[in-house]
Amino acid sequence: MRVLAAMSGGVDSAVAAARLVQQGHDVTGVHLALSKNPQSFRSGARGCCSLEDSHDARRAADRLGIPFYVWDFSDRFRADVVDDFIAEYQAGRTPNPCLRCNEKIKFAAVLERGVALGFDAVATGHYARLVDGRLHRAVDPAKDQSYVLGVLDEQQLSRCLFPLGDTVKTDVRAEAAALGLGVAKKPDSHDICFIPDGDTAGFLDRHLGTTPGEIVDADGTVLGEHQGSHHYTVGQRKGLAIGRPAADGRPRYVLYVEPVNNRVVVGPRERLAVKAITGIRPVWAGPVVEGPWRGFAQVRAHGEPMPATIRLAGGELQVDLDEPCTGIAAGQAVVTYADDRVVGSATINLAA
Image 1 (cartoon, rainbow, N blue to C red):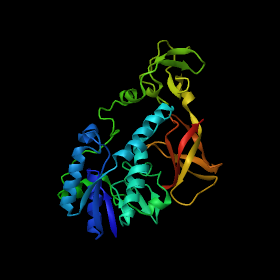
Image 2: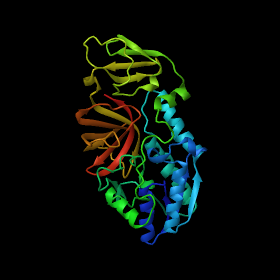
Image 3: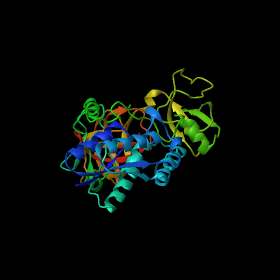
Image 4: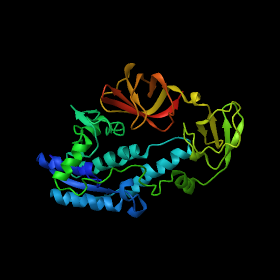
């Protein structure tokens, strides 16, 4: 089988490519250039997609003896991930750029080009399993990435390979060392690659400006002033510019953001509790399940799966949690599971 191995420059994608070579596949490595100026993205252990990552990916491909190419997806990344990130915050929502990158770039764009070039499948170093064509959680629960892959549909999954899903991370590093791969001890990447200094608020200020507005208690009392509603997300407590205490003297958390009025509404922690989630633009990892059915819902990449009753109504996903959850924000993804199998996902539009 002709396989296109997406090589980020990290240990996981390098070992995934190595396993495919060992299995006898015709493997070609590809690194995605996501910035016109790679130095503007993170370097070192904190990021991915940096200039040094492309060099690490090339060295790994050379070690494996496979062809290697760099594909420039910087324009598409800018439009589908960076601009989307900015627009979502401007609209008062909380996006997940890594999930959007998986959806729009690492699979949709790469698959599109790979299939056009005659490849049968795309492989990555994600920790997830495909069982009879269905997406399942990885064996290593600490590294499971099925949540961020929940945006892939059945057709995309039919051309995906995840060689590491049955392995724990410590064994992957040991395998890389045994293969003589220089990335064996390279730290994992994290955070947002296109914000080099890690200052998300500053990044948004540069693109959206600073517009003062009110911080308002849930009862309507003005408690302070902010310099931009995009600085805040649901559940946030730190960094609230509250100039006076709330009437009850209790800590306040961001309940929601009103971008039209440029207001940030805060309240006591119990007001964050959510039991009902409405998701738009559902994506199915297999056949559509209208329900209602009993399963699990996950709203964060490393969040706990929560028992829920799930159904499709009017083209929207309705998720009723058994127990309330806090800190759920519009713009995030809700991924649904039947035991450890991904059923589908949707973008959270409303949580109450």
